[in-house]
Image (cartoon, rainbow, N blue to C red; front, side, top):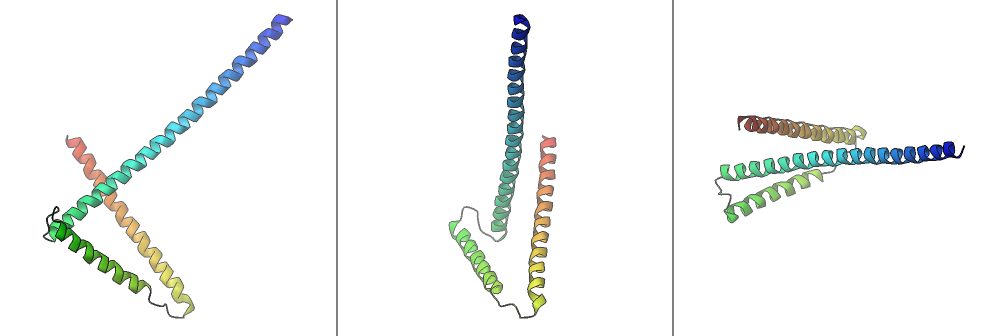
Length: 138
């Protein structure tokens, strides 16, 4: 009888140990998955930043400024800041008092935002395809 009880307790201890280890493995897999997802997001973010930098350099070169020319870059930044200030002033214009005007304005802003997101998404997809082609070419 004592041996049967000993085997029961030993079996329960082994089962508890296995259950703990299985739970730990599951948690580690989940953590690895989360870390992998975070790494993918960081890569995408890094690619987007690199693309943005390249685009800005191309704009600067198109405008006739050398990327290392600080005066040209400052002039470009000043121009962009003036454009942003003008847009902010336009946003502060009062909306007429018609009840639907605010709703229409809000819908327009949401539509513009969606369009911008769609264009950015298309650019990212095109860039990813170009990168894949370049990697395949290598």
